[in-house]
Length: 253
Image (tube, rainbow, N blue to C red; front, side):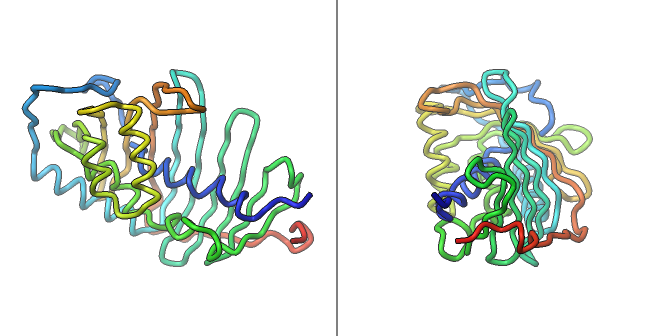
């Protein structure tokens, strides 16, 4: 039985979107490491710091870059994600490692290549991304990186470009610019509970957002668990080389 293209792409696009919108680096030592109801607390928002953080996110999202994310659940090792992407030329390489499983993906314009699924063996599948809902969001880097940050309600700037504060996931969801991001944030809101506040730490260097860390309750396999996402970005503006797999390595559709 041949793998279905829509099924194959569905494994990668939502994972990428969810990782980017929840990602954040640094150390989360200052606020508390778990979401809090924060009822009765008067938020303190450094507006200049908030503007700088948003500008850094836009700058990082509009440039070619490398991204590495470590996602852990309840303190256990989870998923490692590595991406090289260039939104201007529509090129991307992505590797997702989950335990002993490794999925690799490449994007060239509207062509999407995927390998690592048991059904594929060592072969690659080619998918026409224009026929799959959500494919375009894979390059909406600035929107996805800023999705959580749209809900910042408390923010303070520290030394060395480090920012720390709290996010209201409901506020972020209300400002989401796409259905895919809104749906992902709705799951965060559901798991975190009413009036939840999510702590985050971010870092800016040379005007770029280079790190973001968040910790919050998340639904995994129908159970709520504690998730931590540590994301770093680098190599801004450098060329991204992506080649299509050889024709002999492609499965026949």
